[in-house]
Amino acid sequence: MSTAAESNAEEVAELYDDFSEFHARINDNNLHVGYWEDEHDGASFQEAAETMTQQLIRRLEPQAGQRILDVGCGIGQPAFSLARSQQVDITGITVSRRQIERAGTTAAELGLQDRVRFEYADATKLPYADGAFDAAWFFESMIHMPDKALALREVARVLRPGARLAIADMFHEPGKDWSAAHPIVTAITIDAYADLLEQAGFSLLEVDDVTPHMLVPKPVRVALRAQMLEHRDEWVRIAGEAVVAQFLDPEENTFYTPGLGYVLIAARRN
Ligand code: SAH
Image 1: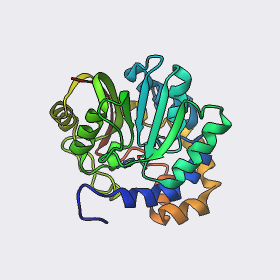
Image 2: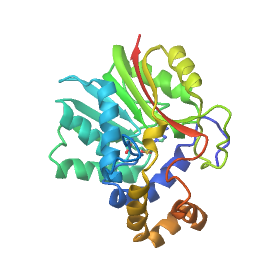
Image 3: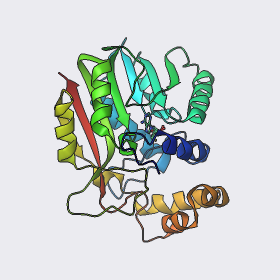
């Protein structure tokens, strides 16, 4: 682990260089959790992951012709859904070179390469001019950024005044301990998010705690476990036996780490 609070990009890149292929197979190129209406919602994990993307698109309110920055783009599926929702131009950034390669290949396969491109950039040091974008989102990426204030200030800088920002991520539920989570995860409370956004020059528009919606309904969990078991060896190699065993424990609520809720935020740059 790096000790410098602001620089964990190498550790993040290492993890995602390894993990992305696996996720591509398991979850249709999405690297985020799902959104279910309630425990009776039978949507598959893959369908629910797309529903979560639609939840974030709704909060971003993309308009035709806009230039949008996807901060922490993974292997591109959210950007592709966003590109299909409106005639927008998207730049996705990540610190994993393997993700850039893979996302770029998929963009070409989908015929979206003219409107969606993927580049190497660290959210805390963006290689873009002031006001270069009309909107931006952090989709389950801020959780990996130890210096969230710096990342928000950088994104505020490259957004024009009035631009919309959307965030989907885990947050620290006050009073609960989440110390068992992965070392490259740093979670903050919803109140801390609100403060950081305001300090970075954003006005809050919507803040929704959607934790109940990311809990995987029981039948969906059973199906997902069966699917993941088919890739058990690869999974153990990447994540380790302990993580895999925990994930496959039927008593555990897949993807919910106690103490880590899920929040959707919409804000506007002042
Ligand atoms: N938004 C995508 C991927 C989420 S995974 C999806 O929902 O499918 C987290 C992503 O954040 C990875 O692509 C990781 O490389 C990226 N990330 C983490 N820290 C980053 C940083 N400092 N700068 C840019 N990207 C970062």
